[in-house]
Amino acid sequence: MSLMTGFTMASVTFVDMLQTWESYGLFSHFLPFLLIFALVFGILTKSQILGENKGVITIISITIGLLSLQYNLVPEFFAQITPALGVGMIVLLVALVLMGLFVDWEEDKWGKYVFFGIGAIIALIVILSSLAGNNWQFGWWWDSYGSAVILIVILALAFGIAILGSKKKAKSS
Image 1 (cartoon, one colour):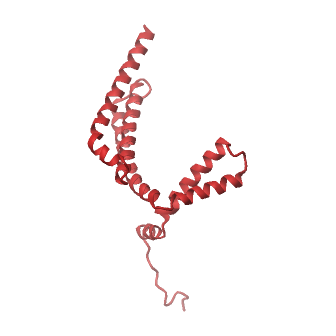
Image 2 (tube, rainbow, N blue to C red; image 1 turned 90 degrees about the vertical axis):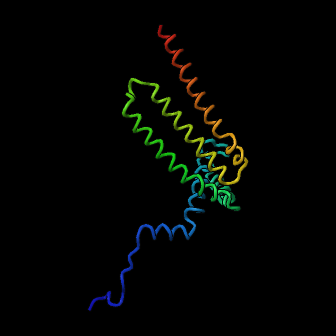
Image 3 (cartoon, rainbow, N blue to C red; image 1 turned 90 degrees about the horizontal axis):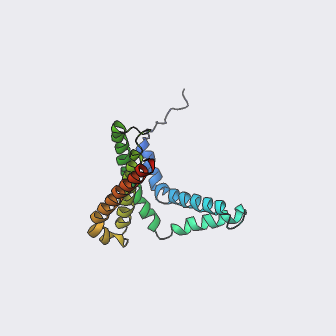
């Protein structure tokens, strides 16, 4: 007679596991707390503004991490920014693949600047759209002037690349 008689094996999928973790608040509260704790702890440790007393630094980091979750602003912001960040990273990866077809990264130094510019524009869009999603002051402003800001950033990058390129050519002459 088997010991497993009367027991059924429940199949738990990865999605079920993620939904269970989400219901426990892992993604909305624990992970943002952990990230804020790690950032505050790292900054205080590196700056040594409080000396090397890890106990005090730990208590301050825990306190700031917990207080930041008090009014749901941080969990809502993380809920807005992380999907947008994922999409932005995929767009950046596609740009990298497409640029890899045409740019020789060893010889063409301009490719790095263009890639950095694309990344900066994506970062700006992700941050401003996430702030707008949380009803920050940028919401109405970004809706009205966002396309103008993107155009100004692109033009500034183009002028910067042109100026840097002309200075390098003038030095080499």
